[in-house]
Amino acid sequence: MSDDLRDQLHEIRVPTLVITGSQDSLTPLGDAEELAELIPRAELIVLSGAGHGLMVEAAGAYNKAVAEFLERVVESGRAASAPRAAAG
Image (cartoon, rainbow, N blue to C red):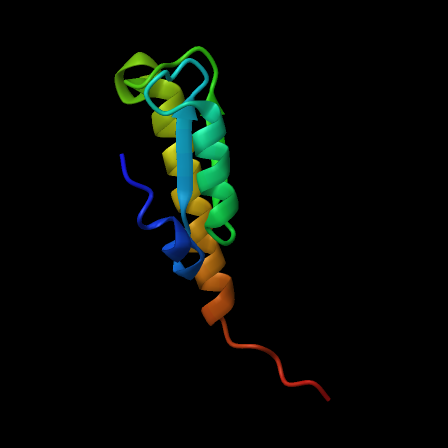
């Protein structure tokens, strides 16, 4: 696959979860690590023992990781939009 978009990854400004399986031969761990490094504030989660079909191979762990990530994103958004007390 082409790496044409690699130079634009630093422009991503939304919460990003990079999730891979430790046994993924189609997208090796090193590629996932690089992707997470190139996207600002991206989180990387590696599911031990899972391959490229990690959504099926490790469904419970995958769902838990995604749900926890989404909870953190929602909480972060709430905290950022909460009114701040006036300094006095």
